[in-house]
Amino acid sequence: MKTAAIIVAAGRGTRVGGSVPKQYANLAGRSVIAWTLSAFARHEDVTHIQVAIHPDDTELYARATMPASSKLLPPVHGGATRQLSVLKGLEALSGRNIAKVLIHDAARPFVQQTTISTVISALDTDRGALAAVPLADTLKLCDETDHVADTIPRDRLWRAQTPQGFKFDDILAAHTSAAASGRDDFTDDAALAEWAGIPVKLVEDDNGNTKITTNADLTRANLLMNTLLTPHIGTGFDVHRFGPGNHVILGGVEIPHTHALQGHSDADVVLHALTDAVLGALGDGDIGQHFPPSDPKWKGAASHIFLQDAVNRVAIRGGQIANADVTVLCEAPKIGPHRDAIKARVANIMGLQPRRIGIKATTTEGLGFTGRQEGIAAMASVMLLLP
Ligand code: MG
Image (cartoon, rainbow, N blue to C red; front, side, top):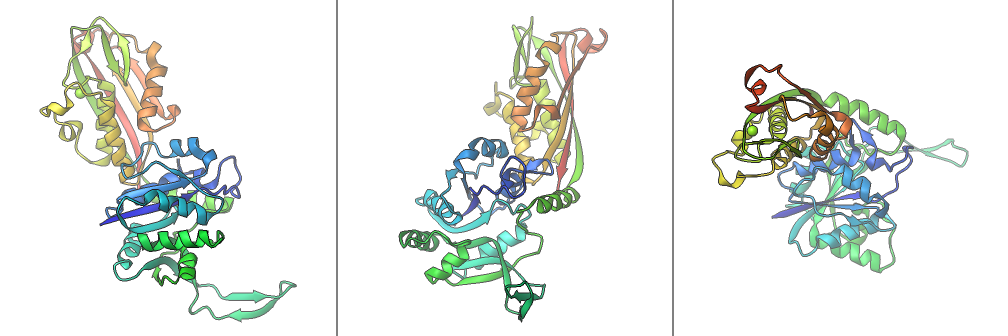
């Protein structure tokens, strides 16, 4: 049974200040929406993710979602209100045979896996389910002069959060008829469901699944996210021997040379060492285990496939790459003239800023196999931050 998540990211949300809408603000080294998306991407029951974005944010979104989960569908442009953006997302999903859909705010990056699970399973027995928190504070009703007029009993009051889950056909029909009747002002989908007569079950959520709205929220979120992440270090080492040819490929960049590197794939020692460093930091085997040289599928393969796979594994674990550092060991070719190109290409493959990538080279003073120019070696270190 297919379950989709719609992530609502079309708002301008500039109350946090800064030059970008809050869903693209920096949260512990990634954008807020990148954290939100990885929470849904790594949930095993979520099969599709549909994001509704503002048309002005196309580039911000593309940067925020690199590398992209295979569950992520191309984004749709949202509408004038949150409600109309959700409708666009629902329409984009129709025809995909989706049974359940969760609708979630991009600005809630702390959503727990258990919350997603509970909302999905509530839909086995209910038509709608809403992640919500029972109120802990005493509520006051004020008069026109900001004095207390009344105290409101809180025992049946909850704060509505997201995700909010529904049977797909139900909520699409409700949204379509709300828009057709000229309503476009529902601030959440549970309110629209209520209007359409769909019963919505309250599912108790944790207090941490807050929405980042103000700059203070963002500061608090950064502090919290940083305490949830632990550094993990990984190292990689690779060697390939020289054979006949007129260029080598290092860090995905073709460099003219008197020889080529031999190997089952394109023999890119830089990308192979980096792949092993990422896998090492994840404690997830090595490149030979995930891409066995015995498999003809990888013959002549461009090695960015291996590194991108490793980087995706980091995203699936909800982690991020802090930095990567490489040393190439060879007498020739000279790496210096190609350093910036390699840095840019590796940064692109790993979805990082070039300043987070170190590319260095050294000779071995004529000593050993690299000194005798029998091949090229590369060493890599990677720092991951993992939840
Ligand atoms: Mg290799």
